[in-house]
Every structure is written in C-alpha cells, then in structure tokens.
Amino acid sequence: MGVVVALPAGIVLGRYGLTGEHSAPDRKPGTVAPKRMRDAYSPSFRSDPYVIQQQRKIVESLEQACRETRQHCKEAEAARRSVEAAAAGR
Image (cartoon, rainbow, N blue to C red; front, top):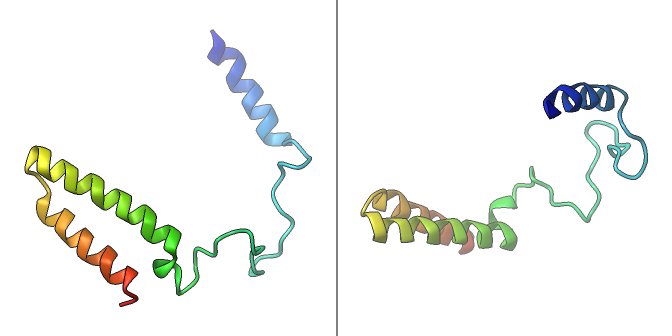
C-alpha cells in the first residue's frame, strides 16, 4: 500500500525537483571541481593517501576471508602487492 503512494510522490518530486542547498552545483562541463572535493580523474589518484588507506582495508578483508575459507588467496596476495606498489609510488 505504501508503494502506491510513494512511487507517484517520488516521480513528481523527481520531475520537478527540490531547489535549495541540496541542488546540483552550477558548473559548466569541463570545469575543475572545487578544492574540497577529490579529483577522481587526477593522474595521482592511485597514490592518494585516502585511497590507499581504503584499499588496504579491502585487502585486509580479502586476506581475512582467505584465512577463514582458504578461497581467493591468490587474489588477496595480488591485491596486497598492488596496494603496496601504489603506496611506494610505483
């Protein structure tokens, strides 16, 4: 029953949108993002300390799964090498 009300309401709100502080930024295509945002297309993205930290968390999860299930151990090992190479700047 909630879907019957929520779906049309979502369509109407999506069509007309909500204006205010949550609207999309007014930037022209191809302009540089504000400094407070990370540039996902930067050539140095892979050596970004935040990215490396997040990748290490993922690798640790893969390694833990390898220890527990004895599956995907080669992938975990390759991921560790890749993250450490990125951290070293290679």
